[in-house]
Length: 219
Image (tube, rainbow, N blue to C red; front, side, top):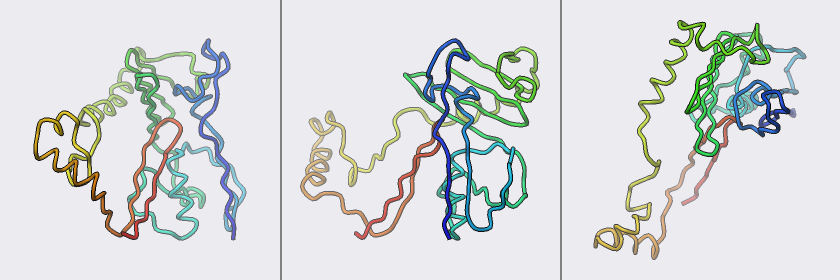
């Protein structure tokens, strides 16, 4: 009745691109492509070539255990793939290192990498080492991949925070200059935040996979 999942958070780079030891800092195959092995009841021995994401691991484990995950995960269960159903899927990877946001989109053998100062496009079946940047050779593929940019541009800029004064401390400048903010600050510090009973799941996703937080409150 035990399932064992073997995986890695990222690979390493050893001078393939002229530098050593990126430690998860880019989207090339030797960093992005990692092993994923699953053992357990009713999991038959096989090798699956379909590209998947580390964000799929948590919903897969819950599905194997018969636990409904709902829509709390950005990934999806791989159980149908283990049963021989479905095929390769589109995979999105994001990474931010030293104010250098990077995004990679993988679909139908193509990999599109977007960084702040350049774009790269590779066709992995013919170029597994990602030597030939085809950004100027395949305009139709590039335009299709740039749909990703259009979606990302719609995300509002600025910090992600809760502006509810009942549960979030106001900014110091507001506390010093507004009686309402000072009262809100005083109540939170003195009374604390009273969390209602229940459970919640939240996550952040990057090139290394999904980091999830599952919180249960008894009130």
